[in-house]
Image (tube, rainbow, N blue to C red; front, top):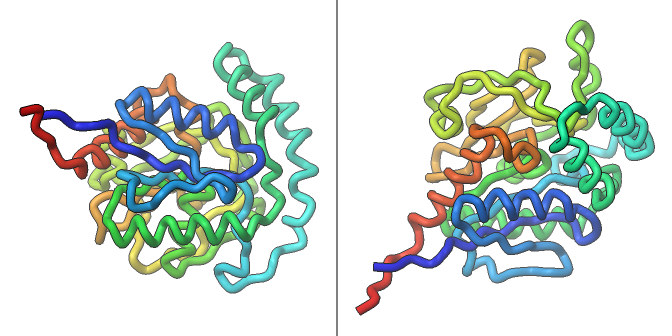
Length: 269
C-alpha cells in the first residue's frame, strides 16, 4: 500500500512574504509534506489540498469585523525598521541573524491593508471548513480564523504592556502558557513554551465556536482551536522561524500527519 505526500496550501501576500514561505515550506518538507504557495496572483485548486496554512503578514481589514482602522495603525510600518535594527544587534546565535536577514529582505509591509488577500484567504478557509481538512493559522492566520467565525481583534496591543515590557522579536523570548489537554498542548508536549513575537494585533472578542488554548501573562490570547473540526489551530507566534526547537517543529509535524491521514491508500498491485 502506498501514499503520496500530502499537499499543504500556504497563503501569503502577492508581494513579499518570501522568507516566511521558504521557512514554512522547509517545516512542511521536514515532516514529509509538500507545500504549495497560494496568493492572489498564484492560486491552487482548493479541492486538491490536503491541508491549509494561513500565513502571517499584513493586518486584516478591520471592516471585516465591523471596525474602522485605528489612527495608530496607519503609519505603523514606518516604526518597524528601528525595532528590527535593535533586535538584530542583540542576536548572538548564527541562526537568528540569518533568519532576520532573509525576512528583512523579502518581508512585505504589514501596515498595508490587502483586501484582495483577505477575500482570498477567507474563501480558502471556508472551503477548508467545508471539506474538514486540517488548518493551521499563523499570526495573522490565527486572527483571520477568529474573524471568520465572528470574533474581533485588538488593532493595537501596546496598552496591554506596562510593568511587563512589550516583546517584539524573532528570537523566542515570550513565555506562553498552554492548556495541556488541548490539541496544541498534546502536540507540543509542554504546558509552558517560549515563542517569538512579531505581532502588534491580537484576538479581542473570541468567536464563540473557538476555544483559547494558550495565553501570555498579560491575558493576550496566543493560540485558539476549533473543537468542532478535527484540526483547526491558530497560533499567534511564528513557528516557522524556530525550526531548531522541537516543540515548534511538532506544530508542522501534527499538521502534516493530520493531512496525510486524509489521503486514501492505494494498492501497488
